Structures are given as structure tokens and as C-alpha cells.
Amino acid sequence: MNEKEVAELRRRFRQDRSGISHVRGCYVNENREIVSQFDQPLGVMTQEENEKLLALLKRTLSGTLGKNLLDITFATQQVVHGAEHKLLMDLRSSELKDEEAVQGLFQTIIQSVALEGNYLILLAHDAYDVPYKGKDGEELEDASEQVFSYILCSVCPVKLTKPALSYQVQEGAFHTQTADWVVAPPELGFLFPAFDGRSANIYAALYYTKNTQDIHEDFISAVFRTEPPMPAAVQKENFRAVLGDALEEDCCLPVVQAVHDQLCGLMEDHKESHEPEPLVIGKKEVRQALAANGVSQEHIQAFEQRYDETFGADAQLSPRNLVDPKKMELKTADVSIQVSPDRSDLIQTRIINGVKYILVRVEEGVEVNGVPVQITQ
Image (cartoon, rainbow, N blue to C red; front, side):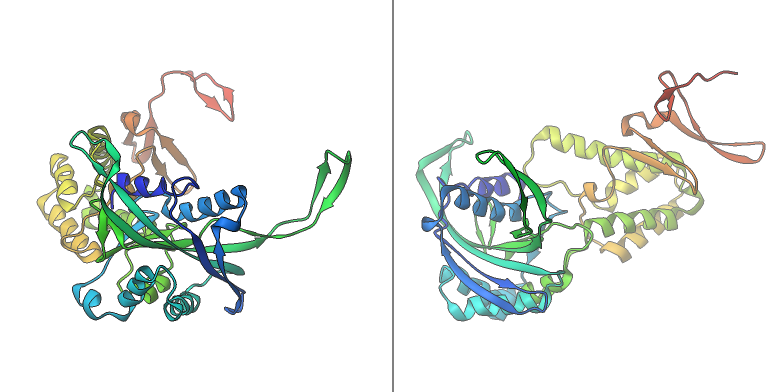
């Protein structure tokens, strides 16, 4: 799925647009026991309750593609014979009315999710009458191409609030507000099937994780029976390690700056192009930056080999998972320096009288702890 397709579905989660008639779910305690189950019609809820529930479900489609929103792909064999895929299809085709399928998914999630405390599992079904888009990109609301039928699952922690002092305006008095249990935004969830090319792709799902470092791999393995994707934070750590280990003495400041600038430049070009498909890069783009900055052929080949071993020979990664386009940071054991990527030219390294230095060229406006200071001879 691309950003436009995710955004199109997110716009569904409003009371005047949503086709969700009811939400099924269960309340699970810290001992992995179902305390209660519910099938909540949205029609009997107040407008405020309705909006809050839809906003909660909508959060399962939030975040950044490749970081919070991860593509899950089913093998052909799974689609034809896989029990896990059949379960999802049964939930979708029955519009969550297949009791055996609902209970099966609940138990699969409960046995695989490791969350502290209590949580809710929410299940919703929607049938989206996809508007036809003309050649100019304009949607024609009264012209539909197809109906996109899908399910959305959200796993939401239930947290206990702290007692607080509140002021009641009508009474003109203070009262203690007791602690209460509230539903927090989802920690994880998924959309099935994926909305690819503005139509259903039963060979894929879109998985959501709030934490980009811990993507709940056990949940992915249990629900989808597929290899969990490498978390964005792990991709960044591994990419740094691959560069440092493979380049050895060639891994100097100008080379790392060049790789950073190359990837940031690709991200900027992609943004300006308004291309809806997420930007991905492979080892080729990094190799170009290495070769252009004097890295030896031996070390370039070492980088490619380490890249293949770590990510896969044909791996395509989001550059946002590898570098931070908003900052460049230099660190030693005692010092940390952050610089805007477009002014990385201000930083140099030097060896003076046998001592290694990081030099920062300054122009004006130097402050120490917020105090303006002068630099003198």
C-alpha cells in the first residue's frame, strides 16, 4: 500500500463516512484470560462515543509506511491451503459473524501478545464503495468501481488513570476524581486484505505497530505465519554496523557524510515528485556514494557482501529507516554534536600534533548553556 491508499481508508473513519455498523471485541486481563466479550452496535452509541471509537480504530492506520505500517505478504501456498489465511478470509466474508473464526482469532492473539496489564481486542468490518477516479485524479462519488470489503483489528491497552483533583463549575467546588480504567490508543493491529491499487489484495495485509523497535514478532508469526519484517530501528543499527565493519579505515567522516547526503537527496527528490509509492533503495545507491568518494573497490565489495548477509541480496529498504534526514550527529565518549544535514560542511576532522580533533567552523551566534560567548585568539 502507498500513502494515498492509506490516507483514503483513514478518511473512512468518520461517522458520516464509515460503513462500520458494529464492533466486536473482548477484554483480556493480565493473566491472558478473557474477562468479557461484546458486540457493540454503533447505532446505539452517542455521537461522541461513536467518534472516539472510530478515532481509536483509525490509529491502527497511522504512522509511517515502513516503520509503523509494515507490509505482510502471504505465499501462494498459504492463500490456497493456509489455515491462518482461511481464518482471515472467513472473518471478512462473514462480516465478523462467524463465531468460530472470531474466537479462533481471539485465542491466537491472546497466546501471542505480550502486553503488560489488561487490554482490549477490537474487530471491525467495513465495506467501502470505492469511488471511480477519472484521468485527472478527481473522485466521482456517484460512480463506483468496486466494493472493498475488509476487517480491521486493534489491540489496545487498558490503563488505570491516576486520582486527580477536579473543579466542578456548576457546583463551584473541588472534588476528587477517582482512578478509572481507560482505553489507550492501539499498540498493534492490522488491516486485511491490503488496499493495493485501490482494490483488495488477498495476498497481503497491512500490519501496524506503535513501537518501531518492538514490532511484536510473536504476534506476526502466530496470526500470519510469515517471517516478521526487520524493525526499522534494527535496520538502522544493522546498516551502521555494515558500513563500519566493511569499510574499515575508509569509513571516515566525508564518506559517511556522502552516504547520508545521497540518501537524503533521494528522499527530497521523491518528496518533490509527489510519487505515491514509498521510496526504497538497495545497495546500488549506497555503492554509488562510496565509489564517488574514493572508497576502495575491495571495501565496496565487502560492503555489498555484508549487505547481502544482513538484509538479503535483493533487499529494498526505506532510506528513512537508515538515516535521519533532519540531523547528523557526531559522538565521542564525552561529547555529542548535532548539525543540520545541509550544513554538514561545517564539520571536519583533523589530526594536529598526533591528536585527533573534531573541528566545527563557527560564524556567529555561539552560545554555551544559552549564554552568548565570544571566540577570541
